[in-house]
Image (cartoon, rainbow, N blue to C red):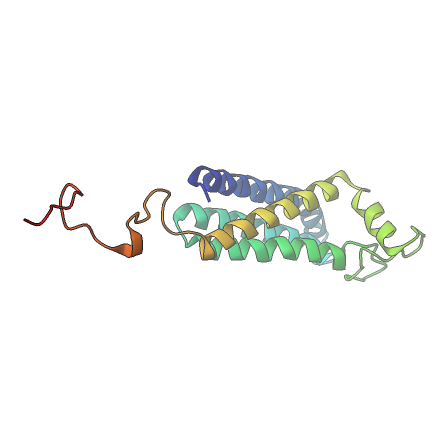
Length: 181
């Protein structure tokens, strides 16, 4: 992968990670503070998970900037992005009462048609939700590409490969072979 492309992908991944962290912090902090004011901060544990996961993403960005091994940072980013996506599927529905798990594909209390129709309607029912899921999906794809390149990519820079056949060394300083007398 070209170095400029890799740098652009890393920069884009950092921006997307910061954006999703900011959105989740924005969504989770206000309700969490309201619940804390009435003395029941874990009434809806999703809000605490939003805040904690946002902080984890920001710590990950900081660790990447500090110089932690890139493959570790990419792997942790992939886990968090997948957690956000799967978390929405498992917790993004309409909880009833004290339920925490409310599947996004269930149409409790109303009908959306098929399972896919329910997911699509829930996804596009909130600008915040469609924004975060789009960001997380793109971030996941970029992190997968970066991790693959980091683990299995070409380690030699362009043009640094040995051009001599079979790795044979040229004994003469100027590259020309001297004829034997």
